[in-house]
Image (cartoon, rainbow over all chains, first blue to last red; front, side, top):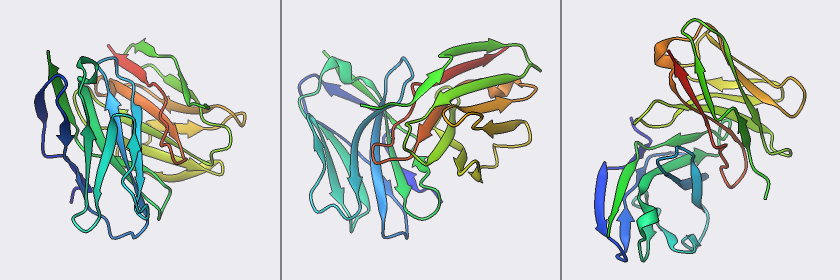
Length: 115
Length: 110
């Protein structure tokens, strides 16, 4: 069974609009962390934001915020005021506290920002 | 801010040749990882390394692959006798809250 599910293979959004990228996860571990990464066409994996399972508040980093709904096992990324440079592949990922802390990735969502 | 560094950024190799991909993880991290991303596909876990030995490996990480921490700072992935299907982006990572990844090595096997 997939641990991380990203149901949107691609999205088109008008510049300056907000965009929500969906992510659901599956774990029985009470302690885990959720990540979002951006991968531009150059290929590097850029860390955007992190949410711990015990964090009371949703994580925010500049224009990025993580809409964490623990009961629904959902960790959507919200990008406010989108910019052309936001066009990239976005990966949701999870790390479970048990085991060796490896990160498991979803299949990604390709975001296109339209001028 | 400390970061994970990888070299080379690109490598082209002939099928059947051995390649070594190099990484310098963040110095006070304990776990180190290699991941692979075939073009256009998801990022796949290969192997984790802790206390100078493999902690966990995926089914992708067969006898063709090996990892080493030769000198306490570098962390290497060796691929023996490369195949065309080994062409991919290889990412190194080390443990920590930030989930920091290196910028990757793009390996092309021809």
